Length: 482
Image 1 (tube, rainbow, N blue to C red):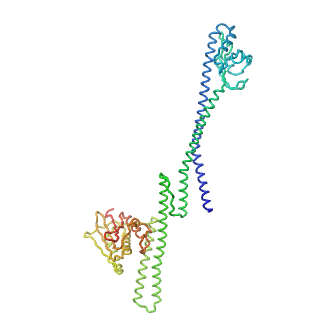
Image 2: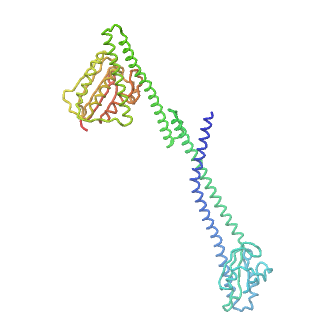
Image 3: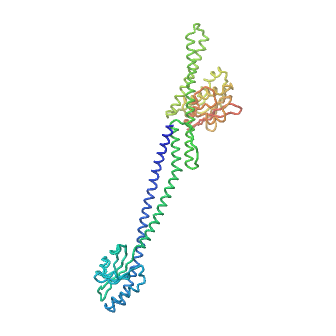
């Protein structure tokens, strides 16, 4: 229970770390981009609103000041004050914009808003510049009297080429500031919504990808810890589903290999113990036999020799298999008379099979077969293994037939027994290492795998199937030319 809680806690921490890294690596660039977009938009919106207001105010100031200069100042400065009063009184936009007439000393003379401002000095630099430089000047900032944010445009009034005053238009920035703030709020809300959508989509993606990967990782950990054959429930049809299939297939194959390995160890232990028991038993019997019966002695020695031969064969198979597994399995290639090597194996096993009541037939083609490139020792090892396998698994038929011939530029060796054959379901696996299937015959289950490897190294094929009329047939095909 404690171990399960520990694994669950570890998995939770791992998922949390994956989420944090994923969110950080995905959301951070999006957040930076959104911040830049908001900043650019804010700058653009502010610039647009303030520029639009300033342009309008400047045009209005130029129009009002131009009309005042054209119609009033040319008639003499004596009518200045009267005409300024008339202009502020007739000013149509006085509800939004304040019109001020300011003396050359910088003090307000007349205001469209309140006469109480008369005599006060705004003290802004737009007035100073308009008087000093005889050009339109702009001020944006706080009003010294009210503390309100304002935008002011000052246009000089001249008489005989001399600045005699300033006409100043002043408007509050409260409305435009509100518009700018609303626009900024809107873009911030859009950015926040976009960021939220990115985070939510990434969390959904994490739930759909990272957690299944964590499940697969946990399964791989269980398999590596010895849980061979463990299967992950498949819930996906995309690449994750393919990954789950591969993990499940790997787990199944590892489980099968481990099972075959266990069976192999058990089988080899039994196979080693049986001949050793016979050898030890007959050795003690011969040693302790007081009569010295020649028949008994001959029989015991024959059994000891046969069992020793079995042990030697098993050890040879194990050594060959070990070489095959670690890549040390090599050939000593030379020109080989394949027919002669096969006939040597036939003659070697014919007498042994006769003693067991098994008839071994051999048929050779009429044409003489040319030599081929190969390792004679390895090829003879294959022939002996195949003949021994036929007697072991098909000996109940009491008949084995063998042949060698030439077919389509290949030399073909066939060995057939007349036993029960191989179940169809087991045919795809009979050449796999450690596989013995339903057979109860003695053996390690690696002989055919070694034979298949030897023939493959020669560029040939090694096939096993069921023959018509019963029994199994092994076909070996070797090319005559490299």
